[in-house]
Amino acid sequence: MLQQTQVSTVIAYYTRFIDRYNDISSLANADPDDVLALWTGLGYYARARNLHKAAIIMVEKHHGEMPDTLENLMALPGIGRSTAGAIMALAHKQAFPILDGNVKRVLARYNAISGWPGKKQVEQNLWQLAESLLPKKRVANYIQAQMDLGATICTRTKPLCSHCPLQQDCKAYLYEDPRNYPSPKPKKETPLRQTHWLIAQNTHGEIFLEKRPNHGIWGGLWSFPEKNEMKEVQFCSEHQLNIKTISTTPMAPIHHVFTHFKLDIYPFLIQCEYNSQQIGDNNCTGWYTIRNALRLGLPAPVKALLTLLE
Figure 1 (cartoon, helix red, strand yellow):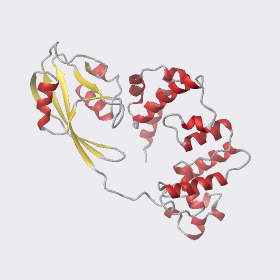
Figure 2 (tube, one colour):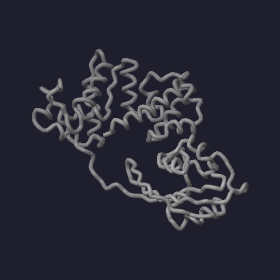
Figure 3 (tube, rainbow, N blue to C red):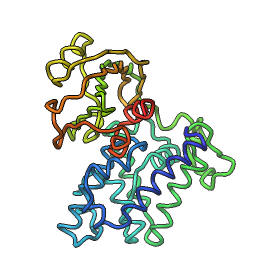
Figure 4 (cartoon, rainbow, N blue to C red):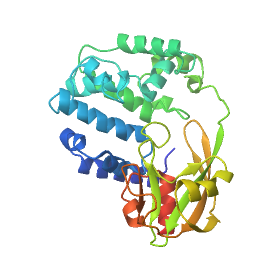
């Protein structure tokens, strides 16, 4: 659960992003690096990349407008059936169901549907139920009410059943404990990975950064060169980065948690001589002053380390 200060920070980041890209065309025409830079701190960077790609598609194929059919909405990167249904219901007043986490919980409890919603069969059952319950009028109000009910009353751990307008017909409330529905996601051990970061800083105070591939962890963001093995750190700095090392100093390890795994990062600050012949700037690598580096799209741990070195 986010603390109030965290919520305020997230809102501030989103507000900044929306203020910069206040229409589809401005987002479509933006540089991907600028988009990711403004998204820094919000996490789930694939969402920023998908937003940018979706804006480009809307400009190229839909005259800069949001599509008004479920199929065209779902064809946009990052938009699934539930999000598309919400847009159709709330923006176009069309009768389409949604199935976000709150709605799944409300439907599972109201009908005592057991099983983890992530399982295909359980999800299909919930979709069928969601469709069958759609009203013929005021669809937008109904969809919004579903989401609000799950967010404020039919909450995950402490449902306020005494305040629920569906209490008299809710099977989970009448016959069991509502907290038993839906079934939780089966637990499995979270894998732990390790990596080593090379923070090369030359005598001009510039830091070497490289742009990560668009797919995978922190896709499209700028980061430090990394190696899986400690023995590769020195070799990489001298032979692959083509720098003359003055000193190598280990920094405090960083423990970062992702959705599906944990990552232990071991950073090494490598002071090196400035050499005009060293790796030059290009679209994927470059030497940056810390001030300029902080304007790029950066993973949170990279930004924290740069701020520490500033």
